[in-house]
View 1 (cartoon, rainbow, N blue to C red):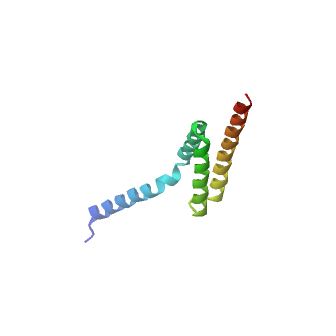
View 2: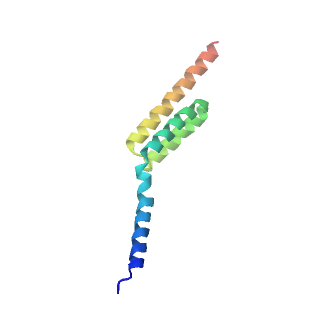
View 3: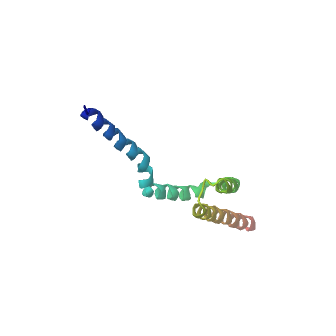
Length: 95
């Protein structure tokens, strides 16, 4: 005979597992806010730390942990921050 409670329990377990697997792909807005908070955190980072982050970023890209679009966007963001820091240092040295 067919065990109806076991079938129902199996189906519910399957749906729950499917939810756990697919839910990270449905939360894009959370990633955007995370990227924005990282951009705000860049205001308090040193030049050496920025170079270290760029190095890690390049390594992650070469190991195919990052897509090309993500790599280029993040690299541009960090390079712009380095240029800002260098400009500030030049301005301080002239003063």
